[in-house]
Every structure is written in structure tokens, then in C-alpha cells.
Length: 291
Image (tube, rainbow, N blue to C red; front, side, top):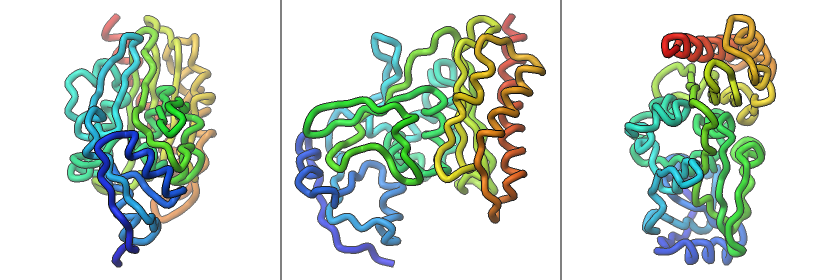
């Protein structure tokens, strides 16, 4: 199938890109990596009148820690930039674990981290990690910049909180208070397939005690599932058989899976519980070895 006719612009500045979006009144789409948008355009699930390609705008391909300890990821950082980072496994283990599981190597070469967040796929990997980490999106429009909490950014399947004339220019991951611990597990039938179920867990450890706990799920609901409240049962506790079981049960209860060709709802909920248990046990074992 061929896409509908559309115009194409490749602005050299953010101001120019925002002006193009503003002038087209909601009929334009931003193109960064294009790994989600282009297939949707080809299949006519999306029919924008204009594609605004931001790849020629300088200064959007950074990944750095700022003075407050926030990890800042620019709009043109590719999946593979996170995958090949040598520092991310120690500083942000949840992101590092997910980076190898996003789609396939070809998509990871071109697709962008922020673009994936904006796509808001219920089975997307990055939105789950960002919700678990308490991340934020920086949106820039004609009136300047604003920050949007990831828990409020994903409004539903393939729907985000950006205004039609805003661009997501940056993702922010807040600093860890203590030691970062966490991981991301994903069940897929084959490499590059959508998740049958996936779990992101991010903990701030103060010694052996959990100072903060975050969790989100993908593939087990009509949108990315925010399970932060469920896993908060761990806060103030140590990781042992009892606390891990309670957390795994609470997170599994937060899932909202449906039976389909990938498995029954009960099966998917069981996978969620198993993954949470596995991640927390691995963290507990690592803490014991380090003690």
C-alpha cells in the first residue's frame, strides 16, 4: 500500500520546526527515527499533510548527566546509543537492560528513544522504563518549554499529551537517591516481536533498604500500565522472600491483560508475577554479595 500524498520539510532549527507544526494546525507529524511513523503512513493508519523532519536540527543528539544528577536524553538519541553506552549499566540499569530488547538491531540503529516514548505503543519498551524511573518529557512549543511527567504523558494507546504544535525535545530521568538497582524483562515469541508481557523495575537502594520503588508494564493492557503504586509496598523494607512475594502479587494484580493469540490473560498475569519476582531476587542476591 502506498501512503497518501504529503509535503516534506527539513528545518534547520527548532523554532522553524515548531512554526511549521503551528501553521499546519494539527495536520503535521514530526519525523525523527521514523521506525514507527513511516510504517503507519505507508499503511495509512496515519495520513499527515506534512512531515517535519528534525534530523537536520543540531544539538538534539546528546545523553548527559546535568549538575543536579538528572540524566538528559535528547530527541535524536538513537536506541543503539543507549545499547552501546558503557556507563548506563551502572548508573541506570533498568534502561540498560531494556536497550538490548527494543525491536531488532536494524530498528535500534535508526529509531529514537524520545520518538518511541511519543509513539505511546502499549507494548513499547521505553515508556515502561521511564514510568518506572519517574521520568519526564520536555515539550517545546510556540510558548516555550514545559515538563510533563511520564505518568501523565501517555494518555492511551498511541496517544500522548503533546499539543499539535509541540515537539518532545528531551527526556529526563531524575537522579537516584542511594544506589540504582533494577532491570527489564520481556517475553516475546521471536526477536523484534511485540511483547507478550514485559516488566520494568527501578529501585533506589539505601543500603539493604528500598528507598524508592518504581514499576511499569507493557503488553498487558490497552496502554502502558503504571504499577508504581503497586510496587511501593517495598518502600522502607528489605528484599526478602516475604516482601518480594507481596510486591510481585501487587504488580500482577495491577496488570490488565486480555486473552489473544499470544496467550491467555491468566498466563500473561503469571508472567508479570514471575518477572517481578525474578528481578527482585536478582537484586537481593546482588546486594547480599556486595555486603
